[in-house]
Picture 1 (cartoon, rainbow, N blue to C red):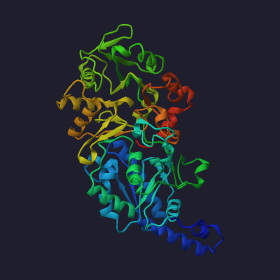
Picture 2: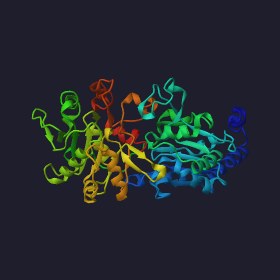
Picture 3: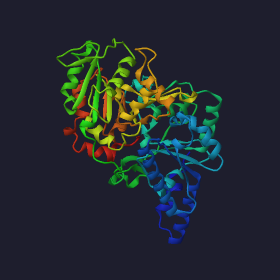
Picture 4: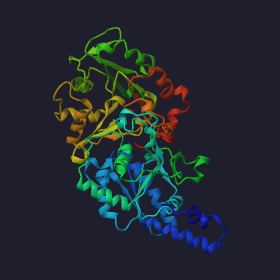
Length: 479
């Protein structure tokens, strides 16, 4: 259990001689060498730059406090194992390398600003020899498909960490979990919402620790008055990106079919279609009133791989404008193109960029990552060129297009770049506090919602003042 409030706060709550205060502070700060920071980084050049800046800030803070600085790791550089972004396959390495000489593993994201002194004080409240799982808790208000309807009777009882606030595990817990990962194959084939799945694995049907809420782990902007008590906050430093990309640089491909021409397409026309200069609807039926284009691929009830690969081929064929970026969406995807333009300013279209919400399949058994299609899949022209040049193709027209693309990218050694601003599901399928510090780019599905009302509330910029500016400052928390 944590030490009592009197035990943990007394050195700082009473007036002490200056020398004694400094000695006690230095004594606490020597604990920095017992902390291992793991930045949940990505191999895309922009994200490497962001992670390096965060690492430099951590080491600069530490050096100003003590000569014994902590270890700061970038997760993408630790191994060629594609599955290491899913954290659990990384635990044996962390246990072997740091289990004996460290007390805490602290995970954070590129946009997580750490107040080093405050964080050390917070961790000092917990017995490092016991199993601890610390974070800012999120909870579902209702059971949701992205969490496989877990805790359907009362989903609020289960808490999982907001990664943007940072989260920590004590090394005794890391060592035990690492042994479990080695001895028992991970059960789930799919990695969908990592933070929820990590928490479930640690909880272990009640046999492991629950997430302990730490109020000092925060997701407010670092310059907010509310963060005075916080050990972490969201960075407000603007990334080194240029102006939003031009609308003319994005070609939009909408996948639809005849039965949804009158149901879903009108929603797009009433919401975000007007923000696209180059957009085509691809269907199994050429309807001149929309208009739609029949690519010669019959409609399938699922998968749509044949249609998606036909779109990729058309993008390079000269039949459509020569643009730097391709956005592929479903006909029930709701998206803000203006926010996407801001986000894409951070990426180099001459690189093979594949961007969206990242899922994983079989990551613990040498599987692959993929961009889940409903939230929108963004490809640089170079990525499409390499994909098609590889000869990779669908094994059937109704194969899952996003997963086949993931297999192709994995075979080519091209990374999937994740952004939490794309969403495969509806707003109500995500924790309220998770969305509170985002300026989202997309949502998906019209099921049991008014899609136009959802678009107006969450994605229409004239109802969210300065949203494109806030995208860089407040919302890029898991890029």
